[in-house]
Image (cartoon, rainbow, N blue to C red; front, side, top):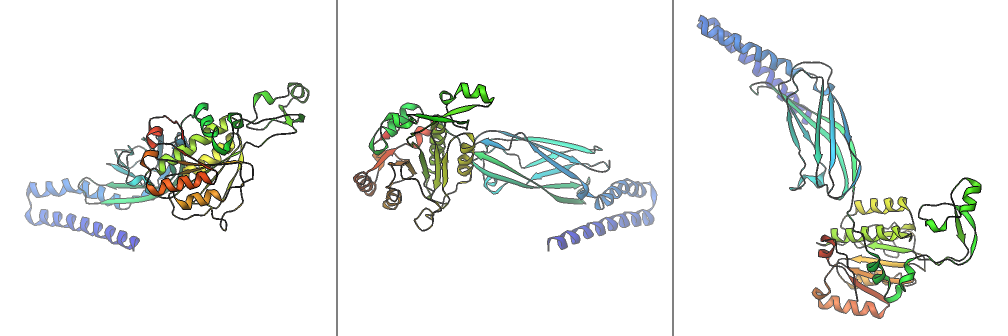
Length: 401
């Protein structure tokens, strides 16, 4: 249907041009005189140019898209560079370029993203356009196509074409550096154990192995490293598990983005301490195993970038794929306290420490939430709070209850 309308519009434009040229010619023939022929010959170049545009091979233009970086953090700026190459030097009066933005950017009023651009290419064969994507929101954004529009002097002919130029930009959530005092405060109370438990403990060195991302500098065995010409680290016979699992609540909430920022902050800070971190969310049945290093950080941040609100509970016993080890700490980041969420966290009661981290001011709790908190504490679940305002102003104090 769209192609038929385009064909009809093109033929109507051609018929209109022919009609105007025939009318001006007939007027000059029957009227005669200098003025009538001057009008005809003055209109003739513009009509000829418009007729040429009707058959101009706009689809022969090649499009190349480049960005300064395909992965960034929310709020950062990405430079987008577009290069258009055409096969001839036919002068073009103007060229309107329209970027078809991803759906989650369409309604963004403060994004600073320019959707349309008007350029005057003239006889240039290669045309370059650069613009900045400012204040990118968290998510995986897919730029799909670009729309071109050309026309003549009087608007008698307009021709457009759409070019596919797919490119993905992954925008990771922002995070804050959590001070050791705040992490110790979280792990210091309840089932999670004392401050020293936020570090891995070792006793007897049983051998050496190759270096792995996340290993501390103090673990390096320099003699073995010099002998093998490869970085070797100590392997310990007894190594208590200090793994931490972050579970995100995907229930619709006004503080959902703050929950994402809190999860990213904990992941970044814990991995920076050399602690292995795993990840899961209520919207997905897939549990990401605990690991350390930059690769694990990238995996979790990629999951966080794609997270969306969802009312389903995919982490139910019947639905989840895999389970958590029995000796890990679990931090469940929620937007509010409900009995359903408490029971979900209580399903992992075989773990060493359960913490429900609520994105709320404890003074604003409803009566039902207070009862849920009391019940959770009787079941051995520690309830802590982080206010969204603390994350906005880069103050991440944890108020443990």
